[in-house]
Image 1: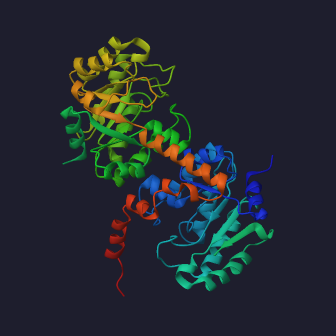
Image 2 (image 1 turned 90 degrees about the vertical axis):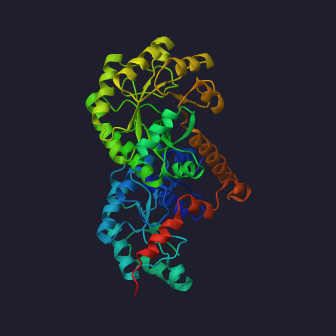
Image 3 (image 1 turned 90 degrees about the horizontal axis):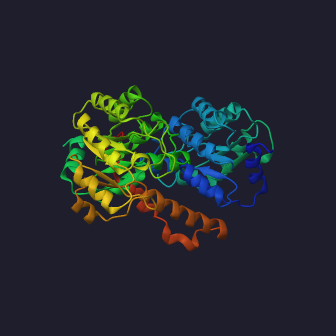
Length: 187
Length: 289
């Protein structure tokens, strides 16, 4: 049986725009799996909206996210990709986020969508150097080298497209080893 | 007025107040926005939605308490919580009441099924003795901090011992101090009429789509004298069908073009979670430079 982390990795390597449906709970994850989706994305905005009834402005805690990931991972067999937002703080918090969304699970989880403030709302980004440190912390903390760390930049809204695009390669180089699919920059 | 007192009034009015159930804070907000007076936190719904499992007693008190806290923080209307069996014996019941009252519940519904429980409309339910349930009700009453915190005692004995025995149990629960009783899964209009007529405390009717109880409308239930009508999982069932339909179209066509009208807009979604109130907080606490 192919480990769940390798199955997630295979999707990125294919580069065929695989549609990954998001779910804020185990029921919707089960629907997605039943419909034949190969992967499920655990949406941070969805958990904020649905579990807490609040906008996606960073109120969900790591404990709440880890509880939801555990429940969803127990309910489906497909690999999960988890929205880890800013990983709840600095590089040390990032370590903890990796542990609790990945290690604690029945089977290792997919990826962790690290940086940023919030999507379509206005906000500020962290300096690139700081983000690179957070990615290094995430990479160091994973136990399974196939556990994908997906680094997202929200710099378009703040600094424009060109800057966002330039941060991609820098973020990508901050990984320690592995194939090019190991890290996906998402400008 | 305190939320506990508001819930008590709703039950005592005996006007068959409609109480939709929710497994999460988002649906609770929709229920509040539509003007419903109170919301019911469904144990079956949390089993189905949060864990993706049937309603067979797998949700823990910790998980329930987390959900109740989130829901009570998100709405102003009273929150009635399905506490199932109280998660064990009278001592567990005492802890359950303390935890849920602290989490913001205005009342709880407890039942006489054997722990771990099953959905009231599943086959193979078992009930504890009347004496044991009365001790659990006493433990619940003794544990509440606010005397208006509603203790609603449900019996699942109709399926096992028949309606007479179930009504008899409810009488005993009322004598023990239960504020409201709830005879689960009556099978005919006549049975529902007897429950509302023969029992002195306010009663709850539970309309389960596809369940064992006739799906009577609010007018009929009000005439019978019921206090509250639960539609515990209507929101969940609606969402399930919508999610299936939208994700199915996405899977087949690779986009949401064909099902756009089934989606709440980005703006509707932010309105549902009251983003404006959070924007207002952000500007109130902004550091002026």
